[in-house]
Amino acid sequence: MTDLAIKGGIVVSSGRRWRANVYVEDSRVVHVGPEDESAGNVVDADGLLVLPGMVDTHVHLMDPGDTTREDFPTGTAAAAARGVTTIIEHTHSNPIREPADLREKVAHLEGRSHVDFGLAAHTWPDRLGDLASLWAAGVSFFKIFTCTTHGVPGLTAAQLDEALEGIGGFGGACLIHCEDETITAEAEAVLRREGRADNGLLIEWRNRTAEEVAVAMTGVLAARHGTRATIAHVSTPQVAGIVEWARGMGADLAAEACPQYFALREDEVLVEGPLRKFTPPARARTDGEVADMWSLLRDGLLTHVATDHAPSTRAQKDAGIWEAPFGLPGLDTTLPFLLDAAHRDLIGLEDVVRWYAESPARRYGLFPRKGQVAPGADADIVLMDEAAAWTVSDDDIISKAGWSPYVGRQLVGGVVATYLGGELIAEGARPETAPGGRFLPGPGTVGG
Image 1 (cartoon, rainbow, N blue to C red):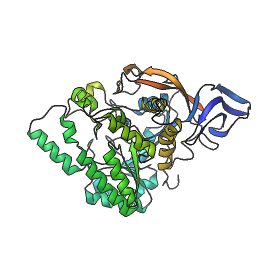
Image 2: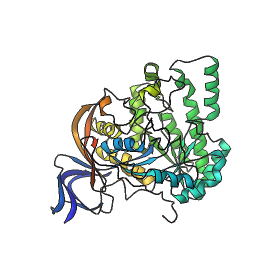
Image 3: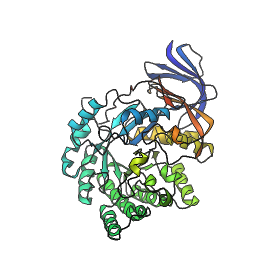
Image 4: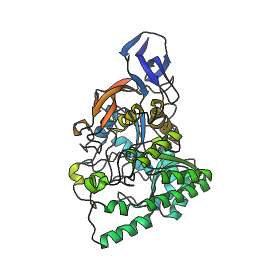
């Protein structure tokens, strides 16, 4: 007799869907198939989808740091309630820059996460010699900026070259925020000289050229050094085209997709102001550009989905377009957004699993333990009602932000229950248990 049986649901993988029972023992999936066996706890999943827990590899929870914006207990409660069971987090306000920082943060987070988590380090210009020791200590990847943002210094071209050579040399992975420092800095200087304070300045400040130039530079250097790199939050088909060009030179370059570049429009910032302040900003101007982004995801040029969850409260956003923090909440809405896209035949259910569970797990060394419902995998399982229709409201947002850029949007697809290691952690879009998530050391960990 197993610990848990989830019976009668439609199991969805990246390659197929089929009716099967899922059996769990000691926090792992032990069997998936038609056999009807007894279990200590039986869950009736008839009429529901059975998905692996989602794996969100780009999350900011500000903990430790200024937790008025977000913290681990609240942010991971939002994740659990919406079907995300694994995250990789890094906070800009208290960055991991050396192994001691990692150890201190892991200790601080004990008993604070509802889901399993990895931690990323920041790549600091004057600490490029510490990257190998950080990788061995257990970070999941290195976050690199090519422009100063959130108080994190951007790397120059020479520094990026050195960093990617080092990371490629020891087989590490990195996630790169691509905006060219010289272009954004000059744009900011011009706008401030002109006394601009209108919301439209964001588009001119964090402009398309800055992103495209930095992605091209990154692609050249990643190809030169054989570095496993991911371009964060690809905002346009043009940026995706540069990624494809770099791959043609041999670059191992993944391209991260975020819902905001499919769902939000460039001109929304003119009305919404700081509530649409994130960077790169929303770029889409036409339905055709949005359709092109979906096509790039379907075709695999965009390799996986993440939220870039970086919330602020409305009060914090009210500081104005220059002063308000960058970022949006996303953990509360991303899986439902993708399920709604499947309902509208923009993608398939299998694609949801591929891009928001399996592919990110593979990219960052978490597969096959994460990202699938299969024997040997962690029993991180989400039960979904693909027909549940709802309209996003502020009341649905568990994140400390308390608001969402998708308020008023009608979605079809809702989370019924979320399991972590076979334990029910959320039901009815609300967390059910105290935090019990575990730290997941990165793939380069030595002695772990």
